[in-house]
Length: 432
Image 1 (cartoon, rainbow, N blue to C red):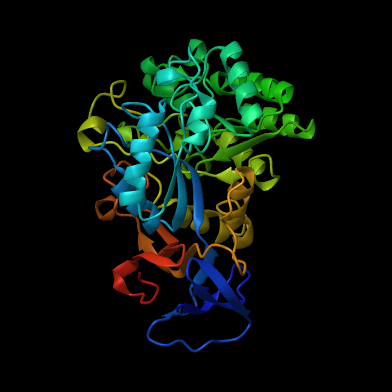
Image 2: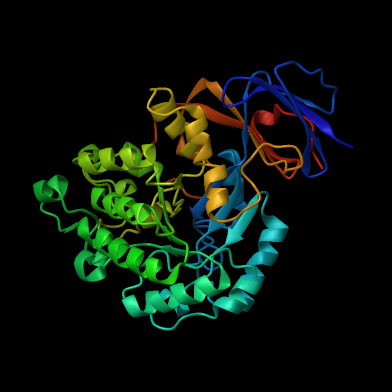
């Protein structure tokens, strides 16, 4: 038995209604209104979008569930309009073993209200020395391979990892950071004006770009799909642009915070909610990132959702962990500051949260078409609300965006035809 989501609008502001049967979209009606019964959803002119996809999140499960777990992270994703997320393997124990991956998948199946796709480590413990068993981990359900959180320091090890991944037809996803240049354990912010003014050591742009440049050459040699995490510098954008022009199978993501904030925005009185890796860079870097998204050099968005406890973030600048949360605020922030301002169109923004990452990683999601999975986000583009970390579903409250007023807030999230979250209980229908 199915139900209608009726009287919404699509990204082009055309009236749209869809009939969901089972897990799929059975029918789409455009340009006219549809009457709904008590089992349907009257969307009241809300935006009907494909469920958003985030290929870079941290669920902290197993081992760090005081920060986040599969259940709370998935709930945060649903509240942000995300129906599919991929979680990084820097857990404890790390996702470098088939048994650990299987145990996590069982928790996902039992506790997650959205699709959670686990990465596996490239190297044992993400230490950059011994490669994991790619074939076994892939068979066990690994989404792709990454040592996110640390860059693979050995070019030889990265080359071997890419060769293995290419043979399996799976992606290599990289946190790009040369530790001989960055020394991230001793530094917290970018090497720029803020660091100089306050007498801090900084992380230089080149520490990221050097690894990107190295890796695109290795990807070119192996033919693997190589994806760059959280690009933050103008130099990295230039390297990726040149590699794409040569036909290298390279893609890249950028986070909302690197598009909206720069070192000039950091308060003089330091707050560790501004500490993230990569760090906030210069205004020129932000401009280069926006240009990179606009011309297609940067393919998609990702949150790098990285929850930590308030106690951890209350430590000193050096001792506190890197990272901010992002799942519940990502779409409203980008919609408000890029669509409402006319920099990008709504279809352009949505594509980079949906069909583009789906295509990059060969996922059968991210589109609204008859016969496709009924993964849907209903979004109210008219209401203005203020970001309040105390209302987050995530266990993490660590964000520099507290108090920002935004439009484009999700109202309901539907995964495989099932309503998994509805704001204020204001949506009926589709419950299973």
